[in-house]
Image (cartoon, rainbow, N blue to C red; front, side, top):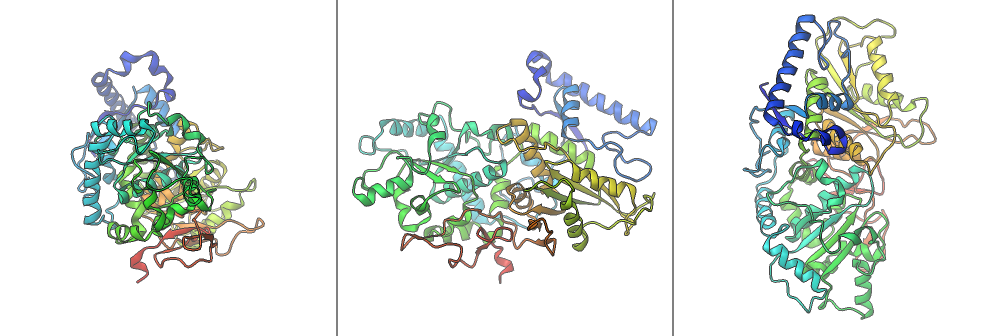
Length: 565
């Protein structure tokens, strides 16, 4: 594949020496040419000396002699002047079936139009109606986004502090997404849900700039989706909770008591859509209560769940959601590929790792391991191997027989886990023994952070890169209840095999099951009767296209329509 060298700047705290060498870091053309020549030299040298370069296959047809992980890539990037090789080949469907708009800057976000080179041809094409609605949204965002005249006028409306004192005549309404400190998977899922709500209600989505979004994702629109840092309420976001006077639930209680009325609403409302929301805040998902927020210019939404399936319970949204997504099992798949494009630095990690460790394999198997209880004896590995063997994902090994020297097929296993032990044990097993099928199995792990650090930038960068790499695999095994796994399989349009949690330290039988759809699970559904205004519980009747989750009995998820016919 033809390649050129493009800048992929990592965050400043990832490469501290760059701050002291600005002139060196900004000498784009000179460094690019030098780095390319340097890599060419190493490739040529490795070929002449018959030595592996960046995971080149060794002569014994075993695993890579040196598995290159994220830290290796980052270190070598520093040495080469902050550059990653990027493909210049034009993908056949760079717009993903019309999902993406044409004309956005290529250099500032290489992944947007190059991602199709790393994915198989997708059978899940966006509907023509979704494509047209996205183009309309982009026009709205361009008109109403930050620092536009309409945005500035809407901001004056907010500063007025009263609906009666100032009339918002711009036609622009907003939903601001701000996340709590939770795992990256939760944040990605809730952000996609907020965008769906914006799409359904003709609002502009703005993102809290303190959310680390700029370090992970490219700007998806021509005008920024980042809320300006001087927004008047930005310092209050972290203090909002379900009992805040500005919350939707509190407003409804005040209206029912007569202390407020729906004709004189505040300039903004806080939406508490976290897992701990109470019955009053759950009324956000009631059709008869949606008009309360309809004419409020500014909505501030805080969420840590994938609440898209709950929006389907609002009857006025059902037809629109069905038109946007004729196959409801692709809601996040399309929204995720539209919104979440890795920044150049993250894309460099992804593509360099993929090209080094995974590209040569005939088939790629992803295994995402989330450990909920301590597992010093690696018992979970037995469950993983039992699942892989039962579902013909990976072959068994031949006892103590040595590794065969030739093979017709190679499978690359990509393990994503905070722990290192599972990778080490599986790699050792396939290194020391041949397989019963004669296949060569290579095992790779990009990182092993040991602990989850939700508020550390580099940790989240690696997590996002691993989710994306998992989404590029051909088949995927994920852990139950893991939003990390949800993002990976839904982004890739994959129906994973789910590893169920052991009960009383006893492995489940069967060890895994195939998911019923590609969609993520909403872990905390409202379960609220909008007529009686009472909690109903998981036993409540669900829409035929929204069912309980495979891995969480009280969660709900969209089901593929075509598979229910």
